[in-house]
Amino acid sequence: MPISRVTKVYAIQDAKIAPLTADPAGGSATYGALIDVPGIKSLEISGDVEVKSLRGDNTQLATNSSITNVQVSVTHAKLSLDVLVAILGGAVTDSGTGTAETSTWDLTSANATMPPFKLEGVTPAGGVDTVGGDLHVVLHKLTLASFPDLGFSEEDFRIASFTANADPLLSNSKWISITLNETAAAIA
Image 1: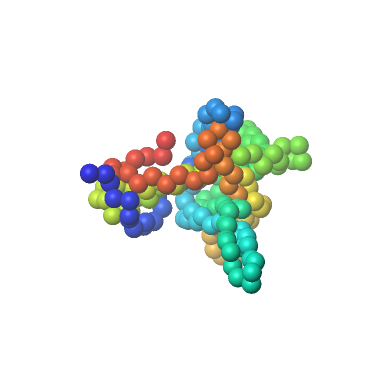
Image 2: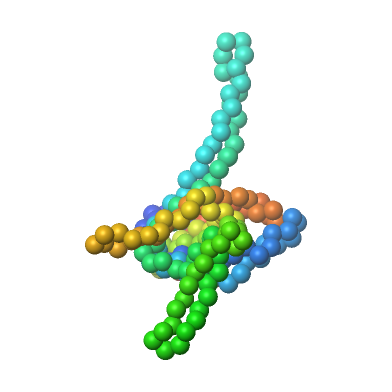
């Protein structure tokens, strides 16, 4: 008997992004190394639908709808310089030794590339109806939709976030994949 196609969705335990390195039409998309989105708090998917109505003879004759945008919003508790490179561009430079070590992310007009990337999020084991199972959501090709929320907050933690728009892959036309696993699996 196949696994149930209906489930609750409880919590998010992990999320990772990977730079999209190739997406040839008729080929296979390839991605760079996975980068942890540290302290993932939420992954929310929304979209826009354009509706066209055909009227005539003083009545509704037909309606057609099409998806015009898929968007994801992500909030995470910790700032990652590697995530910033993957979603916005820029470069990270490590320098110094001992107690004088630094890691600096620099964004310049030349390296603000807004590269495409994949995002995958997963519930904890038991975050679905199937005992010991989990649910994975993959957005295959994203591009940042607005500058990420960064900065400081007086006497409080600053939560980082970003919003990105999805496009279908050229290689297989996929926008979103949702996989319900009978046995929990790590993001791979």
